[in-house]
Length: 317
Image 1: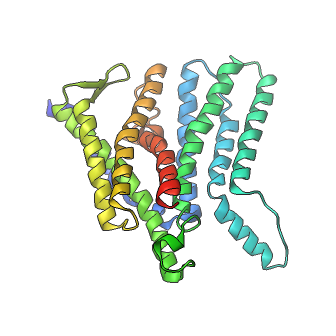
Image 2: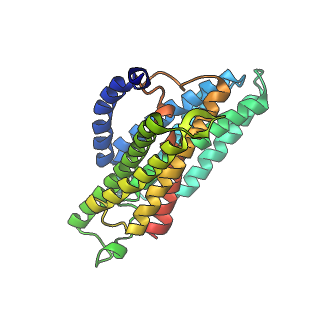
Image 3: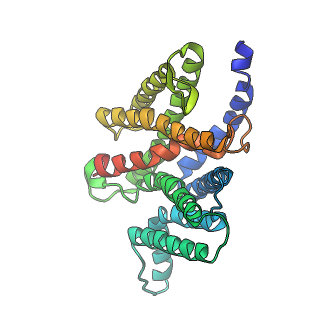
């Protein structure tokens, strides 16, 4: 009985043993490498979402959506790109005028929707309403939400209020290094909190779970597992504050832990709802033992925008 319940565990552990150190390294490096990593996750997740939509009879504009999603992700690293471009041309005596980050994001989204509408006008495949609905929803729900994870990483140092945490208004090299490390540690801590939450919910749910959480959507999830995930998410974020995130207050650590513990599990249920509607167990089989990219990172998609808004508008405001 135990073997069947935990049968896929060795494969999951083996994949995690390779993937987790790689993800941590990329996150700590930050910059364009982290952008490329998140854009890859976003593109694969969006492709999987569109495949789920096709199982329900939709014909989303997959190529247009994935390309638009990549540019949407790029909007969240735009400030770094802007600084690099300005520096390059200023050194050659050329003055440039560029969009702000918000302007760029709005232009991308508006143009994408207009182009999608025009493409569907001349297309004769399925329902235009269903096609456009799934195409646009995918870019907003997946690409835009993933992009906020890039934005969280880019707050350190580009959106960081130096004067609030250091005695001077301008960071020296040592302070700048500390701020950049805080950015990497913040994202790693969020990822670790999600992983610990998922793991606690999984093992406690399988071991002692008796009361179904949301049987219509995910029959195996239990209240016991969900409560364990919530508690361990908070404990993990408190530990992260004590170890590497000393810029966070205890209250902020508690809030972020609760956000992951609640909305991470809700994100998992939302994706389960899509899969159940499409009649599939996993969004794909690209990750051995874990299913698809969207399966593995569904909690992150839901958590990322809330964490970004809280850190930007509350912690660093």
